[in-house]
Length: 256
Image 1 (cartoon, rainbow, N blue to C red):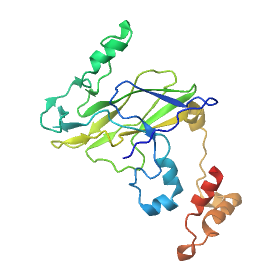
Image 2 (image 1 turned 120 degrees about the horizontal axis):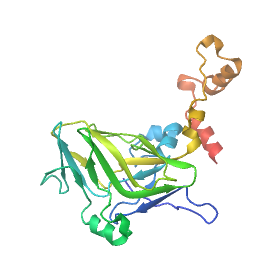
Image 3 (image 1 turned 90 degrees about the horizontal axis):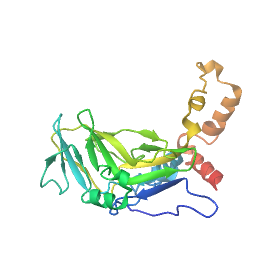
Image 4 (image 1 turned 180 degrees about the horizontal axis):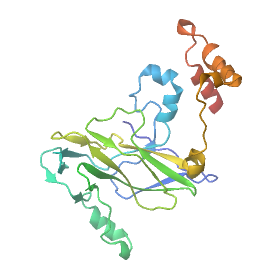
């Protein structure tokens, strides 16, 4: 997947998120792509604006090094050489990073470098560090999730989490759950394994999320909403007479 480095800030607008790359060889994060690196079908890319918008929301984050894992149902093994050699996984550092970290960190932080990979308390749960630390503007958090609309391996799942990165300074990582046993599970530097998305904290507050209503019967669907339905679904036409991409055209006009 091609990597593109975008403009991070202007004099008038400080960045919503700033990424600090601690591992020099780690790929830089890049703006997420509406075509998901060309993997989205052409018809969907042309006409499905919700898919395009969701795909481009946030930034791709990549593994800092190619590595492979295997899982036997209890123990995990790792390889950094394409599977030529394997070792049991407990916690490992990126090669040479501990010394580099100690060279630059304050004395109180010596020997506290974040690991590249670390096993969790439950079998098959692995923390994978990106080589990055992220900080957001005050009041903003990061949703850490798998890349949107990118076909995923069926050999592992990624957990999602929201981190208050405006007041928490720590490694940008995710936990994965290995789901296949006795097969290599590969991670490549050119393929994003995370998509991070900046969210205002009030978006997911109890006050916001708890403020909702449900209308439970079609008989109570109001006239104003029927008018909206007619405008959205009926008026553009149906079947072969329906003009394609009405939503996409309207959304693109609104965005400018």
